[in-house]
Image (tube, rainbow, N blue to C red):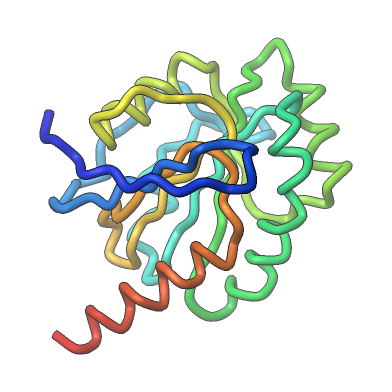
Length: 177
């Protein structure tokens, strides 16, 4: 695995945020098994990346306090950006045994962006494969560029304004090249 630089940020004592800016190109077309949509259809992460827009993957659990507190931000983010420059994909680590709780989370927070569900082990393996780092828990985020390149990963709560700034900065850098 390649070493990935780590930048630390503090967020009012809730969590230490770790923003991993990936200094290398990562092909995310690997076929991570074990993911399905909430209708039970098998899904691959590659089906959601490289669609010409930024993709913010929110990894969540129905019993995660921070996930419940922050879900509305990502619903709003998706609503504001989905027609333009970015979309959100949720991945629940609740697994099959807690699928009813995950469905209640989606309903409670009026989550209208696509969501997948998998067992914790599958999500942790995918996260480690993509980032070279151990999965720290929920919430966690992966940010993919419009071409499908993984650009950043973070563990802990992240304000959507930080992600918007990251996207804007990286879009401007790419446009100036």
